[in-house]
Amino acid sequence: MVRKITRWITWFMLCLFVFFSTSKIVKADLIVEPEDAFYRSHRNSCTYVSRFYIANGEKGYSTIYVNPESKLSVYKVTNETEFYVGFSYDKSGTTWLYCEVPIKANDGSVTYKKGWIPDADCYLKYDGIAFYNDHESELSNYQGEFKDYQVKNEILVWLYPGSGEVVRRFKELDASHISSVYTDEDGRDWGYLGYYFGKVNSWVCLSDPEKEDLPVKKIVKEDLIPPVEPEWSPMDGEYLPFLVAAVLVLVVIVGTFLLIHKIYKHK
Image (cartoon, rainbow, N blue to C red; front, side):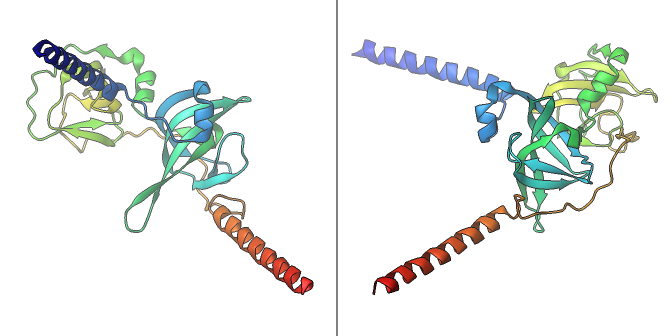
């Protein structure tokens, strides 16, 4: 009996060990898949993106569709609106992006419109990956220069050097995650973080890691189309529920009228 209990305890502890050791791996590399019917049926043909895009449609707005094979729109997003793209899908030479557009209410709450948008109707927001690719030949290997830094308040993590956009703040930073160093025109050193506590492909100013008012030199796309308030039609996603409801009401009214007419006719 004692031997049996010992065996069960051993197996239980082994299961716990496996669970916690694997859960750390999953936490680091977790990819959240969308609850989208088209994505689920075309999962093997979709590519993971996980970057931000900005609407830039020819009409001053971009249309988000239910899926790449549907003409039914979910939402129309005004140019210059920023949104997250999780996955892409190629269809007949056109790249489609699964996006999540934030909609802010007057009370400050945020909901999301989700669907598919043609790649041609938006552009990739310049980010840490783009900066890394553009300056790869200028990068040097990190040599541990930052490992002894003592944090006074908090370390700022930036989208890219000169972006003016702080993406995270840390009370401490494990410098072993810094892979490369870029030196800007003012002589500041920037460390590249490939992945750190859920923040991917961002930068730390090694020369002044806690200074918030660093010079801003944003990189902005030039051929931008001015934003225009979207035009809506009854078949757009915003009005479709009301159209369907109206049709159902009409069907009920007509059905009721025909039923009454049939009853009185038999009398």
